[in-house]
Image (tube, rainbow, N blue to C red; front, side, top):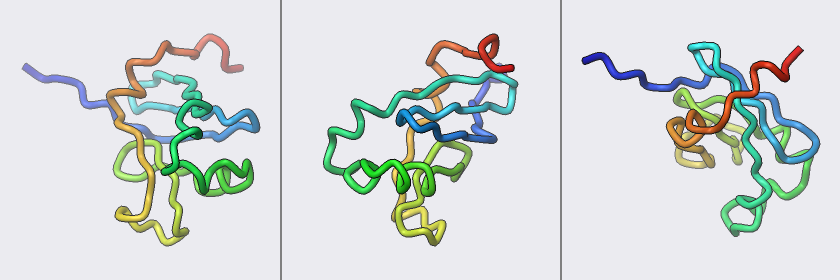
Length: 94
């Protein structure tokens, strides 16, 4: 059986602390980080400019490159399966 492993190919951080997440199969989801930002690990991202500038794709998923060095040991990433389970917003994208 060939099970799909969701792979993030693009992310677009928005001004409202949401991120549009694009998958390799064409699915697009909206990830709301407002609850995550309450956690101390997300503290560096509470500044919207840091949030947007550090947002990237690393290892096939949504991540924030905290150090700016694309160092996997110094990033915050979200499990791609967690993201893929979110409702698709493809119809909302122009």
